[in-house]
View 1 (tube, rainbow, N blue to C red):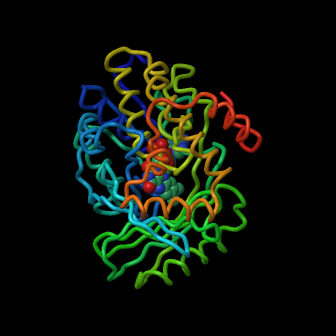
View 2 (cartoon, rainbow, N blue to C red):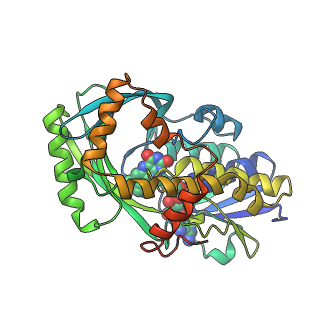
Length: 359
Ligand SMILES: Cc1cc2nc3c(=O)[nH]c(=O)nc-3n(C[C@H](O)[C@H](O)[C@H](O)COP(=O)(O)OP(=O)(O)OC[C@H]3O[C@@H](n4cnc5c(N)ncnc54)[C@H](O)[C@@H]3O)c2cc1C
C-alpha cells in the first residue's frame, strides 16, 4: 500500500495515464514523467484494437467504469475476414472489435488519454526519464523485458472500404498472424513474428503480396510502423513500495499481443489500491493471473498446431457453420478458467525458449 498525497508516475502510456486520471479524480496530486516528447511517441499512427476476449464486459462500458472516456476516434467492427492465401471466411464477433489510432496526433488513444489526464489536474512533464527509485508507480512499458514478438508494417491512405482482415498463412508471419485494418480511408497492414525475427522483412513482403492479390488496398502515402511485444509471468505488481502497471508488470496477451486493456485496467487497480488502501499485488494477481496463463496456453497451441493445414481446416469449419464455429469458440473462448494440465505442459514447453516465463 502506498500512503501518499502526492504521487509520482514514471511513464505516460495507457497504464500510467489510467492510474493518473483515477488518482487525480480522487483528489491526489499527481505528477507523470515521460521520457518521450509526447504521449504515444513510440507509435506512428498504427491502427490498434481493444482486446475483447477474455472479458465479460463490453470494452466501452468497462472503460467508463474505470473513468476513461472515449474522447478519441474509435470505430466498432462486428466482422473479421480470416484467410490464408488459398481460403477465406467471415467470422462474426460476439463482441465488437474497436479500432483506434496510436501516436502523438489528434484523435489517437494517446492524445485522448493525455487530454483526460490534464483535464483531471494531472501534471505531465515530457522529455524527462525518471529513475525508478523516484517513482511511486512504474508504468514504463516494455523496456528491459523479454521480447516474444515483433511487428512490422505500414499505415496508408486508401479508398478501400472498412475492413478487418487477419491473415494466417505461414508465408506471412511466424507463429502469429498478419493483419490489414481499414477504417474511414485509413489503413494499417502489418505482420507479427513470434520467433525467427530475421524473417521480418520477407514475411511482411509476403503478407503485402497476399493482401494485394485478394483485395485492392490502394496504398497511398505509406509510412513504416512497428514495434515489439513483451511478456512475463514474473509479475511483481508491487515491490519496494512501488506499484508496477501495464507492460512494465509483464502484462500482455501472449497469444495475440494485446496489452492496452490490461495496461488501463492495471493502472485503475493500482489507483484503487491507493485510494481504498488495498493490497495492489492481491488485486492485480486475482484479476490477471488466469488471463495471463490462458494466453500462454493459446500461444502454446499456436506454436504446436499453427500451420496452413490447421488454418485451412478452421476456415472450412467456420464457412460451414456460417461464421460461428465451435472450433473458433474453443480457440478464442479464453475465459477466466484455464486448463491446468495444458497450462503445465505449455509452461514447460515455452519456458525452454522464454527465460522470464517462470514465476
Ligand atoms: C506494433 C504494435 C501493435 C500493437 N497492437 C496492439 C493492439 O492492437 N491492441 C492492444 O491491446 N495492444 C497492442 N499492442 C500492445 C500495446 O501497445 C502495449 O501493450 C501498451 O501500449 C502498453 O501500455 P503501457 O502503458 O504499459 O506502456 P507504453 O505504451 O509503452 O508506455 C510507456 C511509456 O513510458 C515511457 N517511459 C519508459 N521509461 C521511462 C522512464 N524511466 N521515465 C519516464 N518515462 C518512461 C515510454 O516512453 C512510454 O511512453 C501493440 C504493440 C505494438 C508494438
